[in-house]
Amino acid sequence: MQGISSRWLLRVLPWVQVSGGTFRVNRRLSHTLGDGRVEFISTGAAIRVIPAELGEIPALRGYEDPDVLQELADRFVQRDFGPGEAILEAGQPADQIVLIAHGKLTKVGEGFYDGEVTLGVVADGDYLGDHNLTEETPGNWDFTLRSATSGTVLTLDRSHLDQLRDRADSLRRHLADYQVAVPAQRTEDGESAIELAAGHHGEPELPGTFVDYDTAPREYELSVAQTVLRVHSRVADLYNEPMNQVEEQIRLTVEALRERQEHEMINNRDFGLLHNADLGHRLHTRTGPPTPDDLDELLAVVWKEPSVILAHPKAIAAFGRECSRRGLYPDTASIQGHQVPAWRGVPILPCNKIPVSRTGTSSMLVMRTGEKNQGVVGLHRTGIPDEYQPSLSVRFMGINEKAVINYLVSAYFSLAVLVPDALGILEDVEVAH
Image (cartoon, rainbow, N blue to C red; front, side, top):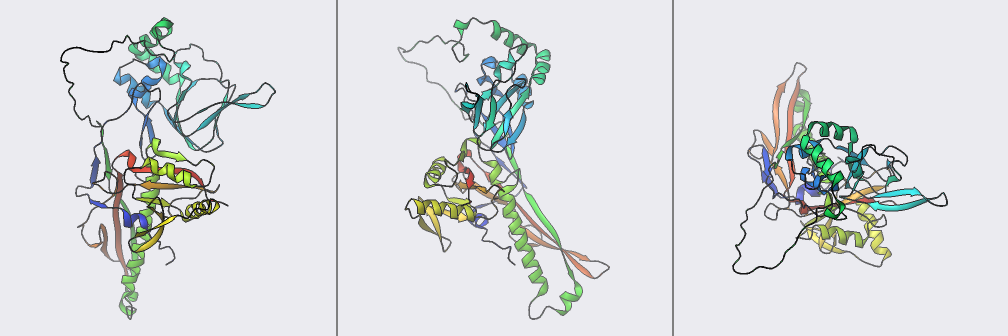
């Protein structure tokens, strides 16, 4: 069977028993207000803005109604883009607020001599069109926003904002106060001026603290890959010598299910590794091919005991070419009796489930594994009825009127990233020559 691969991901992941069918990950609640950048949360491929982070937009700074902020955050629409796409066009009505969740985009305008000029670059956490919150009649965009890398933006139409402002008196008053506020009362970033005093005397009271958890922890339900294996009873009766045909049919079916399992654990939009990396841990190559500098940057993301690097074989070959070009020779590491290439002591393992796009780009992943290390863990359930392998069952379904024996083959699995810094991705890696 040519489709059988090494399946390194399934071999290196520590597996956690999920007795109740659902695995909950309780995390510390974390977001940083006051740094001028909007922060987001991602659940699989779905990205949402943290409602309190809308306070980073000058016109909403200091607004604290959680219900209105939540409704405003829910009205943002996600848009994924690839390199070279135009997100905004010069001359079009500026009737949107744009939040940059991930990626790098270039603001392009018309130059003095009719050519294009670069007006600036925006990236993760930046925002555009915030003046739409206060201006009664927004004008037009005076630049084109074009993507330099793949990424994601969240957009909010002015009409949705107007509907919410008409219903929420507190929001309407806040925006009105912002328009008429004396400029000296705010900093150039739109923040309220702070009167400061420093130093203390005597015995100050020590602050108290507690660990604040995320109020909506993520729960991972076990996924399933299934198929029905059909074997004619005549084959099972007559052709089981010298090899058991039913066992061979089951063995190859299980191999196919395990291949599909690894594919889902990489690509599934809900729990797959490619869609569950934190937005701040997604990097882009500097020049296209994966260079040693790029892998150093990737390891800097998961710097606390990185376990393995996963990459498509073509990406590993591209990295080898870049090393050869610089006269470098990657180390080797011994893992489960195999000698594999390594970088900075971290094994680089091939995984053909990581996709390669039509344009010849792929991704490289680095992760820390293990529940004790707060890393990436596989989830399964052992002890199920008719278990053939851990968390995989082969269940007899009977014989139909055509004398065909049916077996239900099921594999239960999932994957969880316990803390955000356990997984990093190097995106848009060129693998072509």
